[in-house]
Length: 536
Image (tube, rainbow, N blue to C red; front, side, top):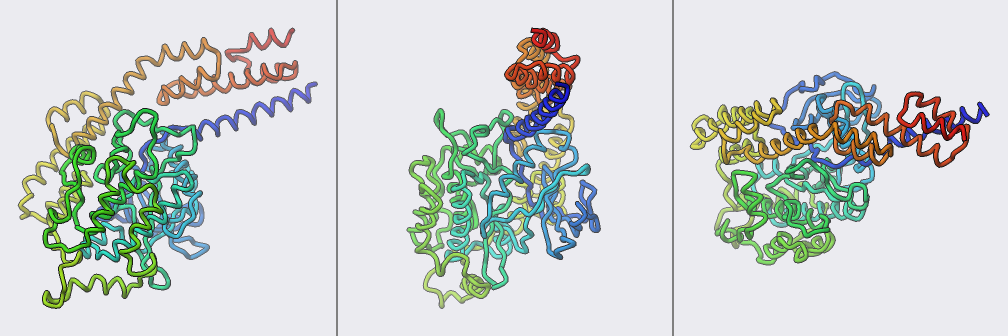
């Protein structure tokens, strides 16, 4: 019987390990995306990684190519394959948060389900003492935003080609029960393949949503947290959903409609200088007609109708699927999607260089570009950091918006200080000093999060007693879900596991199982009851 007890003891340990893995699988979703910030490149990032560092014995860091709120992105070389890779590195200070670690691994798991020529491939991911890393396909190209900054608005045939390739990738994602939720000019890259064909690839599944998994069917993020970029978000992502309704693939089609509008006209359908302004306009205003934005632009009315249907606020009136919108764009293609060569792209762009008397009518490529300082101001606004505003002032000291930029440096500096303090008083002081400014909405979100944390800490002792008295794994599950940052989190997990083992022992109800339970949990909450049951 002692041998059987030992076997049962091993079984309980295996169950405990499986239970922990299962718990990690159902951690709630939250925003996790790495913004590609090429204007703030540095050779060595805050992670301490730099040229020559070798990760996992095979990825040599070459240079940093981007950074964002959650981490950094590096260009690396696979030492054994002699191939370039992109390494996404999660910030060290986030590693202490088990929720963020779980989200990082969830992104990797979701990405490994995706294999499509218009979606950046995920090659590898691993967790180390110095950080969590994801290894993704290195794309030698530009984001749509970078392409527009360099070349201006897209010619219609090229815009339709790029959008069609993006739709092919979205169709692949949607048919696997996933949503991207952050389709934007920063998350689509253009490059040329070995045959010199223009290829569009969706990047960054950091906030993708699995709509088929009931355990994550709804987002349970902190109060007020928005999932996505407000400039490109659908009304339903901003809360325009009925009771019991869920976001579906039509949200991604709306986001792409915003992107396609901006590709063609050089400006988005809604203009605002604040995230709150974008939110209100997505929810309440119709997009601006092409003729009102670019009166000199001659484009078929039919493409405007296609885009405006994608931008319907009522998703029931939008295109029903990525494939349906792909079919609607077909008349505007010059060739099958993904077959335009570099020469084709140059030829389409070259219409801009023709003298006026040789053109039949103004084309999309004829739209005048905004002043460089306006474009740089917009990029700094979207970045939001004080360093971005200082860089703007260094590059454009005589800009008509320099005074406004100096004020925004002060505002961003104050917001960064309030964020670092992580105290309700500091955030309230910021909101009082800087009403209706660039970071007002973010500060409100942070304040809601801090209030929630304070409330959770206040009720934590009572919830602990409730879980202890219940003596059930469900009770400890509720405690862990409500208090993920509790200083007693390790004890709570131990109590939960002890309860799971007790429930298993109760189910099997053999003397050997009870001996194994008492041996494993000599000081556990259920020890006395286990001894009583063993003696029966």
